[in-house]
Length: 210
Image 1 (cartoon, rainbow, N blue to C red):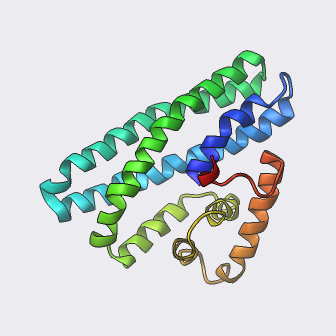
Image 2: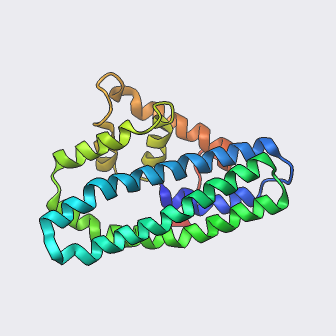
Image 3: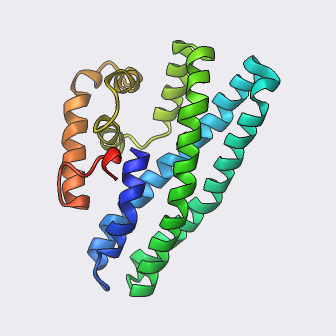
């Protein structure tokens, strides 16, 4: 989800005509929502995952956890810049504000890619070995609880579009029993409608195609 949506953002911004406040609002809201969730996801890892791995693996992972924290710090410095650029562009969708937002998104993209590559290659295997399924479910519940309920179906739909079924089911398991049976259909519908509005298609390019 993060790879796909952040990779597509600069072109989305640059394709908005100067002065088109409505379209700038649509794309700006899209960027703000995903950026906010990226921050939420990183806070969960900083507060829960890294300390737990360090406690259970000791000095053998200390340098890796320091790298994760340093990469999060880099992204934490860039995210407010994205937020400020989005706000400026939505308020005044000029050619200059449009380019400023595209530029900061272009700076964020390689930092995020490097972080995701390292996390998926080196940290996820450790998590699979050292963190129990019950603990991970607890982390996901905490993450889900911090998401606006109105945004949750769309967020799940964004994950479902490329997510492996097991991971998707883990996320769905954190929802209430009243909503879980219908959540997949609702999420898929929310994502298709959102992508049509944002990307011009219900089936945007997947991360492997970018």
